[in-house]
Image (cartoon, rainbow, N blue to C red; front, side):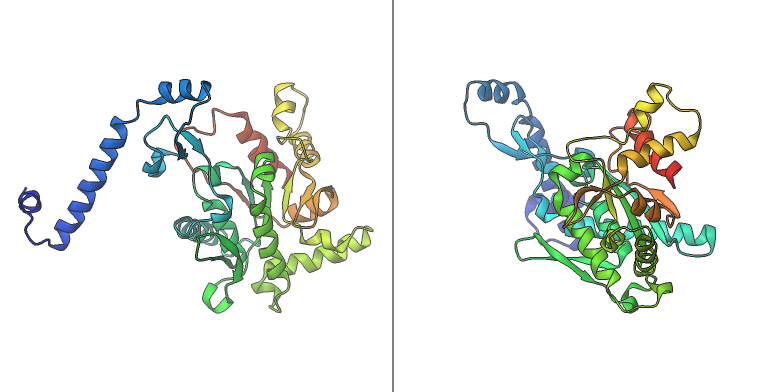
Length: 321
């Protein structure tokens, strides 16, 4: 109460008073925006009349995105070129460290490769936190421009990283493929830089696997550059992982059947140079190195039990590994 009285009287602010004032201002701003969140019907009808509807950002309130209020505006998603944001990078680094610490504690070693299934929710609700985690596992960091956009990635020296570079295998969704091509480009750039580093294989699992896969693909008569691909999806113009259709139709008998379905739907390469070309051989080589399959869950607004895509993507990926 004394702090509140001091603020009302305009007395000199202490550090605590400054934080309280900041919290109060934020609460007042939130209250004002909530009061104004009654314009959905008016905005909708105005849009139908061909009128101007004020634009506004989208996102999840439970992630602290107060800027999406007031509702009733013509919302847009994100600026993909600004992902991951600097805040999302910090979260992604922490998530990667916790994953590695947990695996190290359980197995006594680092995972050589981490499988990720990556949804567009990472961009539209979490500002690229899982993308940040993937980049940090590879041992690179985003390079932001003055305008906040990500211009590329820079290699983190092993002395600063303090661990090996962890390989990744990323199964994206069709929406990521179609609306977030920068995700593909950044991961491809990160992998390309990691495999080109002159580092021992025990400290660079990305390069280690790349060299192993080049030799095996050469034996199979495949192109060597397929060994660099780490991003996979369904064919261009298609969506899903197929497993849910097999389950719903009872068109399977063993886990292996679901794994084959997932593999058939997922064996299409996506890099800066390759768009949707099939290479089941390269994907199988990728999967052979995976130690753990993961995905960041960006919101508590829904859970893994209310959508078939969870078992289709994660279950199929897990069975394929």
